Amino acid sequence: MGIAEKNGGIPTLTAAFVVITGVLGAMLGPWVFKLMRLKDDRVKGIAMGVSAHGLGTAKSFQISAQMGAFAGLAMALSAFIAALVLPWLMKML
Image 1 (cartoon, rainbow, N blue to C red):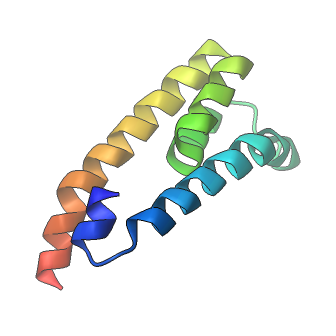
Image 2: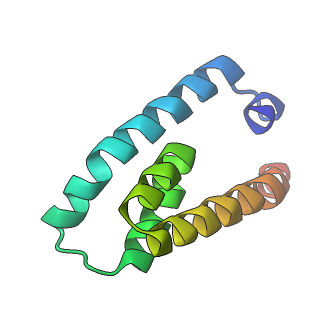
């Protein structure tokens, strides 16, 4: 929300879309993985952590410990990159 506000966005709308993205990702993620025939829990965990945030990570831990660990790592790294790199890139624009 802080990043959205600093870049001229609407924090409330940002929070709403983050929650919606997390819920949809946690609900549809396992189905998409079956549809795409993904078997590797590491790959599925990274996808859930980056796309579905905290709810996706929680769902990943319900599926397997390895998937949950990779989801947590991917979520943390993407947040770290967004917090450090995005403001720097916005200044360049």
